[in-house]
Length: 488
Image: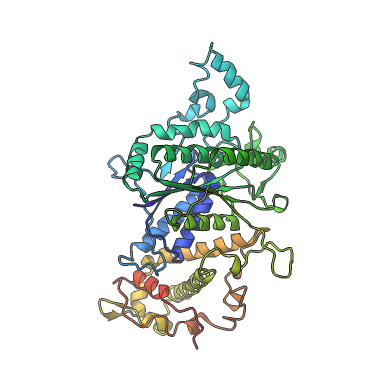
């Protein structure tokens, strides 16, 4: 039975992105992950970035038919690119649009609640006028709910009327060990509207299912909407835009609501930052492909919260968790950097270290492949230990398999950018060099790899026959079992 992970809105997508990286680093989950993206804006840049990561992950894992729980990429991710094809066997979609029942030309709240038709001449029209402004009733919802969760929650309830909901409910009821986790913001529009509705619907549909989630308190700011409308032509006609000034008010009100109404949800994790020092997103966009905000260290902590939830014993839950972000060092310095000892996992930063070394090995490999340098490829010690069908791997085999290996190269390049973005905030993920430079790779031990060329580290990575029978799988297996020590 998979672990279902609902990713709601752009913040949810970035939290899921961090969880996928942790799975790539080999942090083990007992069951496959089944991601479900919930967003009216399916072309949101944060969603497409996470989907691209999932697709690369799946391509790599397809070359690991026999992964051990100690391996990188050991967790299966259930995702189908063809779920919208008519004859597909996928019943529960990985992508759900809560506005899917609306005509594109009438993608607004007034159409959904039948304001212009059934409500006319009734007392419910006056109630709608009291609850929503004219601008809110006619706001285009195709790019999300603009920081107004009351609008989104109305549409989110329709998920229980979808055909796949019956299937999901049935699967959850069949397996008492099944679990559901939700990533969402507490202060915005889409995430804040989706979490309370979806968590309650799932718990009501299958009371025995363990349901938890991360509620992200404000941890970034947006540019002032009035200034944006003055200087961005595309925004001048917008009547409603998210405003950072309302984030803390929204969050405070929501926290009171959850405190009084959500003790029956098995685990609610609250994560936040010092809002006065939060970074402002400079490249702001209302939605679509232009909305691609940088990763943030808090999203990584949200991913660790999901792992904590999935790994808990059946009776080891409590309704509310507060995860502290600001961790001053032993000298009482007022720094907010998150260092190795702050990572909430038994192996701390070791998965990051091993993955960073894989990044360097793959980079060196592709530099030689692109130069068609057979002589140096044949001298890479760890490649000489690999075998396919009892035959040693040679340089020409590696060059011929460049396309097969490209998904790993692309994912490792994305990892480097993700590390950089996590370091580029007021609260930094400061466990390794933000550019992954080998000379000062580790913050807590900057001299460990100083002066080394990556080829000096590969002399005894793996000394047994690999079990995958394909080059990419053999390489991932070899790196999975590599010892994190310096070799001379």
